[in-house]
Length: 155
Image 1 (tube, rainbow, N blue to C red):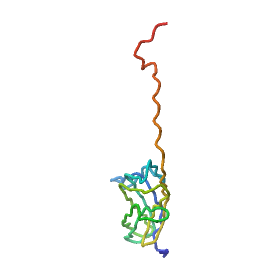
Image 2 (image 1 turned 180 degrees about the horizontal axis):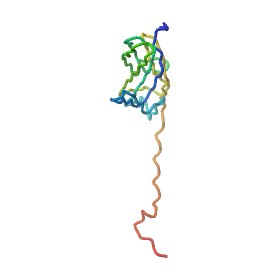
Image 3 (image 1 turned 30 degrees about the vertical axis):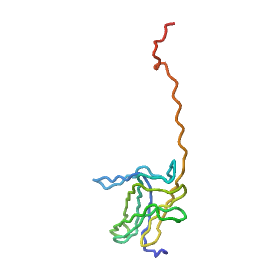
Image 4 (image 1 turned 45 degrees about the vertical axis):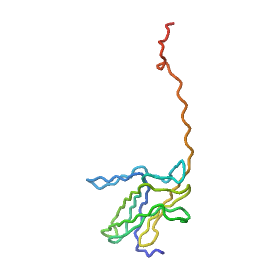
């Protein structure tokens, strides 16, 4: 669907581990922002993934949809979530924080985190899934003088 010029303007679209909202001030802290996920094997499970969106130029109650897809959009979305952003006036800034659990990424490659409003794609962010090899175990440290069972001989 093409843009009409009435869609909200996306100020930020951020993927992170956790979003903490201060109960007193309402301020939000984004913890562990990332654009790459490393996995030892695929399909890979991401225990938790949060998406933060900040927008302006919206009008009233504005439905939005977040989805994560592979780059080719060749299979169903990894996840799709919907919410409503409330704009008191077009100059207001509205934030939306979504939290997803147990996401399964079928294979390594590039994915997209997308935000839609009114069926129109407003913005997308890249999310790379990378297969990594297990780290080799560290060899044990050689014993130091404090590890010896026998007292040192006097010279």
